[in-house]
Image (cartoon, rainbow over all chains, first blue to last red; front, side, top):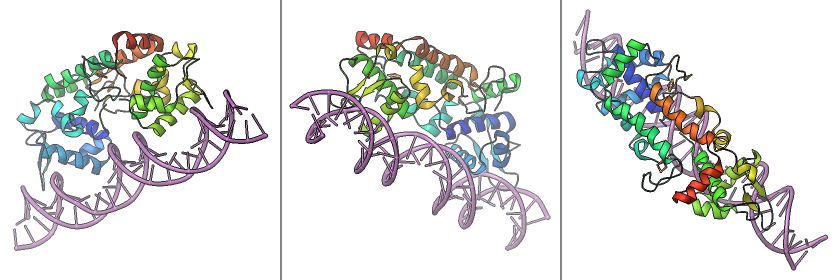
Length: 141
Length: 141
DNA sequence: ATATTAAAAGACTTATTTGTCTTTTAATGG
DNA sequence: CCATTAAAAGACAAATAAGTCTTTTAATAT
Ligand code: FES
Ligand code: FES
């Protein structure tokens, strides 16, 4: 469903949501170590997220990555979109050229419900809310 | 979610379910043309399905691929399993090493529920039932 | 038997994704 | 200003997935 880059991106953003803020930035190394993902690969992903204004970054000593109030009140859907593009939201489970309820494939009904369910959550829940739930319920990253 | 091979495989099996039987076999060319997928690539996929006994094949003149009564009463889940292996049924949406309700990732609740929905359908519906529905509702392949 | 047909098998190429490494740029503190 | 720190940028390399092509094997009909 998601590419590896996208999975790493989601986890990294949530990690930042839980652990960082304006005054305590976090470096790639710490994130990569915590999430157990390749450091340099993650660096490129974080760069891309920063370029799309989904996370903030500052160079130099005491620099690193962090989320501002704006970032943390956004939804995860932006992250998915910036990593994997729009296809995920609209593509047919069987790879047919269009996915539509008017002209559905044999698996459309379930597939559509599945996709919409996940999208709905990612769209209508802020990163902050997710981060709170992660801390409250001690969810994995 | 599914690899391209797996998508082609599902579509090909459903195509055979609708159009073939013991007495009217179908060649790779016809299937590839109908589904608009690369012929030689599909050939390898059909070979693999045949080797796993999910479809039947006969060489030579008037040969081709087809489904027997046994094949058509099986479920699609076998096809997925034989192409993409068991990961799809058990892997975490965020790529964490294990997916479990005991130790869930932040997206587990939705991801799990909806995944189970698709798996349930693929597991408890026979290929024959699906084929009937495809003809009745004129679904795409 | 033999020519024909179509799948089986396997070698190979291309494309995409994932991962690594090095160099450059910018911010900070002394 | 200068040394240090950490992200940005970009060039590569490896791994996997997707697709192509050729040769071999088996079934059929003449
Ligand atoms: S048409 Fe296939 S999932 Fe919607
Ligand atoms: S733990 Fe991530 S989907 Fe179940």
